[in-house]
Image 1 (cartoon, rainbow, N blue to C red):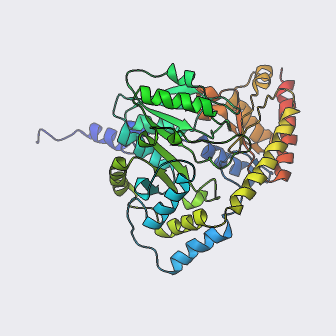
Image 2 (cartoon, helix red, strand yellow; image 1 turned 135 degrees about the vertical axis):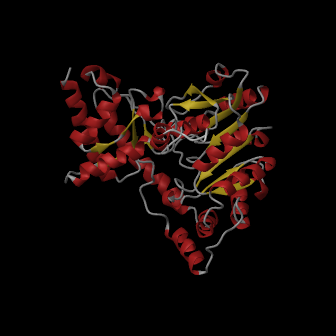
Image 3 (cartoon, rainbow, N blue to C red; image 1 turned 90 degrees about the horizontal axis):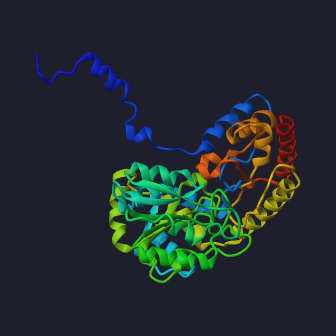
Length: 410
């Protein structure tokens, strides 16, 4: 008998564990997808559900963008292309980014199937096992998840609602000798906040002083209602140490098209290109042609989207402001409200997750518990107002009933 032969028990154990490694089992996820499944179940029972959980603009992709994608398909543009993107799209992206006051050329641009892969690629390329990565809390859960996947240690920092959601002093207190990378997200999900220009200046100084690299997620950068979004990459000395991640999903209602891009220092492009080759090969070329149409065509669709979102934001904030037990700070960007419902939880004795479940199961409103965005999201809900004014009115009425029900449990 061979000395290397494994036992039947060992074979069974390995087969049992073949579905996932420890690394994969440690990955986080987005609770929006679990809530979406629960909302479908409730709807299939015949009940009406108002969907305020998902991060989608809530409108179809503009027709001129759709037509460009269809035209590319009909023209046979269906083969492999360069892993980092076709030259025409990379050039259009560079033109758009330079208009924001950020130095770049097409050679700094990488195109991928959605923005999420760029977060993973950046973390893999720029942090080693044991490095510390500063991540927002509350924040998009994928940041922490992919940091851990690469062996880095996520270090949370606090973000708050309002026109200035982040102070440089908050970051300064978190920087240590192993800190390698700072993840910024502004406009911010889930709070709908911005970073004030003076705080952005101070954050840039910290980055330079501590020799950090920045992953700046700016996918909501054009969905701003008051104030102005500015990229840290526009600050002196920061373009060469920033990976600016953006997407067509929110701005152009292209979530299902899966088209994202990053602007990064030229030496990093080759390494990220290698990661793309090892993963997806390239973003579909006909989708990239739709992206060209989005950037170079009329921007009236973006203006219309911002105006529509401003209207639904105002309606939701007015409605929430009139409900006892809900404290709402007006969001200034993106399309999320982030109310604090601590009084309702205190009265009812429920956790925020239990309260969010009750909101869906008993009142027909799908929302996300803030805990899906980290411990800092506890006692908050995230509500997407990217829906119709009529659905906002229905949601407010149901949220009022939900709050009354929770208060009655005291």
